[in-house]
Image (tube, rainbow, N blue to C red; front, side, top):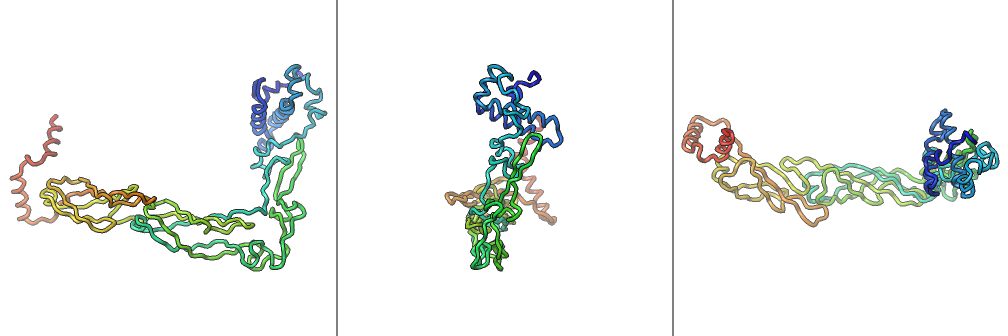
Length: 377
């Protein structure tokens, strides 16, 4: 007993720890040193045994009280040596949640088991759909074809030939799981695994349905009308409820999930509900102003360009953008104009431009004057 470590130290807690703190510390340490997570590690095995020994005492109110008062001498002298107090077998009810994922269902009765014959929702089907810029803006109806598993009409989903019924598996009694117990240096471990007789289904079909071969479902191709809402954006997904694969044991069907890809437009770009585009104008239009015809997703509209418009100026067309997906508002269109420089001028045109430049000088170029003023500074 003199060589034993303090039980509170073993679990890494203080002497005044509550029951909940003791339990949490035990789970943490048991997981850390569990032999199945530390194969071949003798030190981990010893620590694991020590952790369980400490928890066996500190989780019992009477033993804890004697230990707190008298130390190791206050508890059963055979504790930890296979005697009455600690016989090497553990109750792993508390560890079911921790180790269930490693051992397929937990220890003893600690892990939760699902009924294989309970109604199960079908899997969802995922697909992508490409639509045009305008279809995304204003919404559309699209026919999509999918291949999905549907309930077999011959057996109504139970997988049995007409006039027959499945037998409850005698080995697992319909649970689909059987317990396997094995002896280890730390005690007896009980783990769950799929029943080999029924393959984890919980029932045995002696005369399978000829149409679905006992699966209860058949693969069929189905064309479905998909309503694409106005304002949907690239990469967004719509869900059509109940159009996925059939459920099992009377469970509901899954959903059809359609991810939208919006094809690029030749003129327009999109940012949220805003539509962006660029429009070329001539030097003369920029200087004198002009009435422009601007394309929008609704068609062409007229816009009066003011005199002296600079290249790169952006103006707004209110309400000519993308409708919001909830249908309550609509964005704007932003048009950026740029001056297109004429090419391949003849001699007369070039001379005319030179005379124009000479007549204007620098006085009418405000931005140039600002630039060179800053440059001088």
